Image 1 (cartoon, helix red, strand yellow):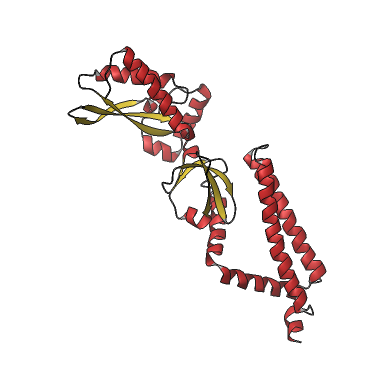
Image 2: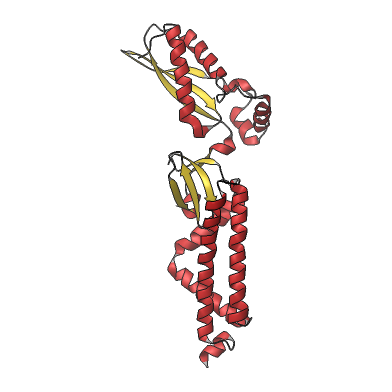
Length: 285
């Protein structure tokens, strides 16, 4: 008698069956999403891969929910409300972290501080690539191939550096030289080598120069660079950062675009510098 009043003439057994179908549908939808991503990520762009996987996931949710509603609960609204109430109570007791992650996931989707395929740094953990963003977590892959599954609540409470959105970043390169080295000659060689490197600014194509010029028009960028609104701000700088008995330490500051290739770019830059320094008889420490 009590169960009929609570569930609108639907037995408690059917109510529990609906809850079971609901949970199985959620698991099946998430598994199919993961499977679709594994199959399509290498064949399509990340955006298209995620779109197809997400549509597949939602179709499973719709089919499973519809089956439970029409064939198990017989479309009884009161039974549906009771079922959702039971599910909500179970979720609430299971974990408050779950709800926090979902809310954080929605905030990430609305604010869009990060997007698929962005190169980011989360809380000083190193540079990683955004591989997936779900309601519960964000998946990153670092340059060594390791996958990181970060709860969205942690993402929202961490400092996020988005290198892809910034477009370019200044990187310091330390270099020790012996006393008596001609700093002006060193600065000239540094400028020439940097300007010949395809991935170091200001050596960019006309198209990229237009993109950077448009970035300068953004209020935040304009405030940072004030009146220095030209490509000369990207010229490499050679500064003396330290002097000791054995020589001087220079800080070469170069701007680059592909932060994910920072190590390779710096290595190639230093190799070319080494060749030029040997040709000019400039001593290194």
